[in-house]
Length: 217
Image: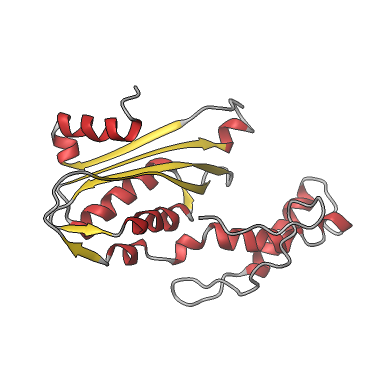
């Protein structure tokens, strides 16, 4: 789901070849890139750096474009990806596993990344499988917490598809735990949201969890 990166020498941030178009909000208002740049310059100065030194001259512009990309989901409606459905009598589990994503924790503005697993039992309508990945992409591209992200995806599925059951499980590592604070690399946060039959029937919940984890505890 990620875009191809552009590298220049040993620099990890060379993105001069990226799309220079200015993202817009849902109301058609351009994202205020210049305002973000000014804020980044202030942060650099506040921590004791010189924002005018050679290595940092273009950093505010790079960060502004990065934030516009990382938070692009604020200006998109994930429901549009749940509109194209097909009428089918299929009434067993449909599961898409290991949907990779990266998001930004709203508490520290540090990334968390991992995998989403989405399963549902159709109630007469099935969805193109790639649309589930698109929903994850939109919902993750916002200042976010994993718990809300998990519930948002499950509720969207219920509202738009009216399935017999929905199960969403997200596994992620959080930079705010691995590179600051408690500093525990390798720690994993797992959240789940069960709706319909997956919430009311233990056997159905056990089935979907077995499918997700291939029988592993």
